[in-house]
Length: 416
Image (tube, rainbow, N blue to C red; front, side, top):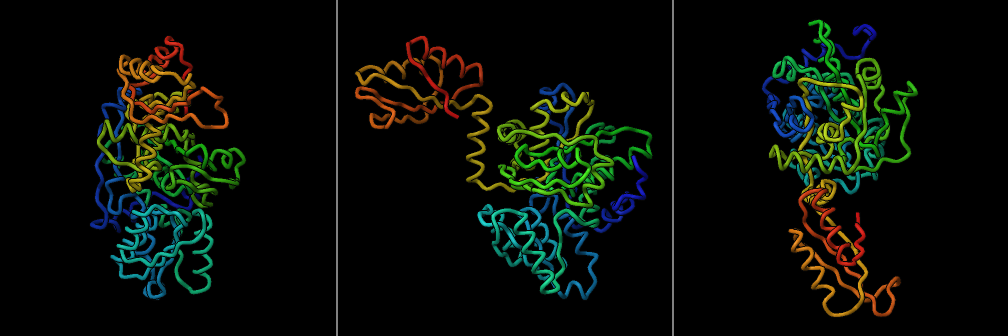
């Protein structure tokens, strides 16, 4: 590990940021998760930044960055770009500080995030198809007008503000030995790593810091392997809050020195984690905020050879579009074996559908939708295709339903 004085953000910076945020943010709770503890065999605690003002951790860094602006800079206004959480953080901080804010958001941004940003008083401009395109336009506007660009992650004040979460974790769970959190551009991971690793060094302790990315938006693993920023050609994930195609320069410099590893999780894992948190912890968390839980459920710590005693997972945000939530819940239920869709080819004769209904009922599954058609390019005369959605009770139960249908001579094909 290099000396902390060579890093762009220090523990002292984060402690000063904590003082600036006094009375501005809420000290979010650290909740013990019995269900997750049982699942991984050690104690797990959830740092609930989904309950932070504006619904995510982003207000921390945004306020610290903007509170340090001079009177002349504040008069010029600020500009930012975000898929939602940074936008709300900047808008809320700007309202508190009396600064005019202009926010660029990608086309197709979730309506609740768009509405909330406008409700905080910011001017919102829709531009581009992803965060990177919105960022480029925001930077162009800043250059053209003199507005102060508030970067979502590549700024030392932003990183210091996010790092205050690390100080809270150590206050609330002093004997923590492993901390997991999502990473997009890297501001949160970098800030928390500086706070926790610096304090751990002072105490002569080791605390593991693990970043988690969605596997379809994972720029950090190849960048760390190459020891250079490696941008992604495409980014596609339900975790829009961490859908960043290129790591930040400053966060990368910190993460490569302090973070123990960055792992990836599947889209099904994200959906399963979101449903798990709703069912077992009664917490509404957006996909980007659930990546740490997904990593635990997918056994990522075990793959790394880490055997934690007390793990803290940062739930970084809870701003989720209800329409996306419906889709994610369905995907999560399917990934957990709680939702089964099958397609079968039948002879077009009386009694076939009745037999299928009986088998499903006797298997204790519940049909939620049925599609029955005699027309289609792959159907021969006298054939019928049916697609059935049903509620099941897990992978073993789903397999039992399929086996019972096969025992009656049917050939169910599971649909994703």
